[in-house]
Amino acid sequence: MSILSLQSVTKEYVGDGQPVRALDGVTLEVNAGEFVALVGRSGCGKSTLLNLAGAMDFPTSGAVLLDGVATSTLDDARLTVLRREKVGFIFQSFQLLHTLTVFENVELPLLLAGKSGARAAAENRLATVELTGLGDRLPHQLSGGQMQRVAIARALIHSPAVLLADEPTGNLDSTTSAVILQLLQRLTREKNTATIMATHSLEAAALADAVVRLRDGKVEEIIRR
Ligand SMILES: Nc1ncnc2c1ncn2[C@@H]1O[C@H](COP(=O)(O)OP(=O)(O)O)[C@@H](O)[C@H]1O
Ligand SMILES: [Mg+2]
Image 1 (cartoon, rainbow, N blue to C red):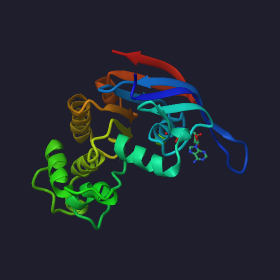
Image 2 (cartoon, rainbow, N blue to C red; image 1 turned 120 degrees about the horizontal axis):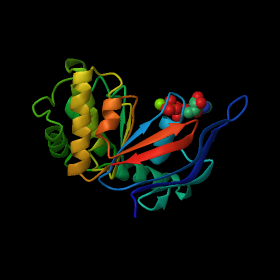
Image 3 (tube, rainbow, N blue to C red; image 1 turned 90 degrees about the horizontal axis):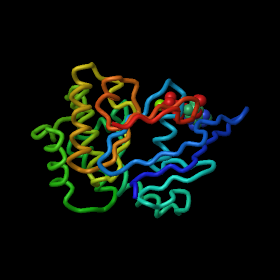
């Protein structure tokens, strides 16, 4: 069974004017250990798909199954646990808390969940992203690539089954982007996560096991290697 399944997913945003159909009948299966690139021009629905995959939002129709569970069927308490334990998110803008140290940023999801052993877990994840020794720094004392590696370490803190990355190299130069992409590829293998990455970068798509091309909210093609 796939770890993430989108079944005929439609998503409409209802604002003041006409509803916007951001996803239109999307069906997609992603397996553990698979690195998927989500491509397509701005506005085609990439971020919407990631938000639905991470149970941050819900389909208007169809179903999103995370580890076999339909996200729309869960109450708030179960959703909180599902998001926390199954999903890690990485963003273009890193989303680190600037007044907290690297250690504290990485530990925070465990502390919020009331779990013990946060420092040891943070040290482990920082080693995984090759940032051992930088735990006491503040984010502004890091390069962009290092900040994104801290964000990846934080996303890994609960050992998620699914890693969702929304244009993770969008703020990085090409050399640093390549390092981050190789890291995501390695983590996908080593941790057997399913990694889904929205990207504009051809280099990024070239490293993926599958490229899903969206157009106007529809899957235009899926290329698997
Ligand atoms: N919260 C929202 N409310 C209304 N419309 C939205 C919202 N989020 C996204 N959209 C619209 O949905 C479509 C898909 O957006 P998005 O998923 O952000 O695309 P992408 O990430 O590929 O650029 C766009 O037309 C966008 O304007
Ligand atoms: Mg987007």
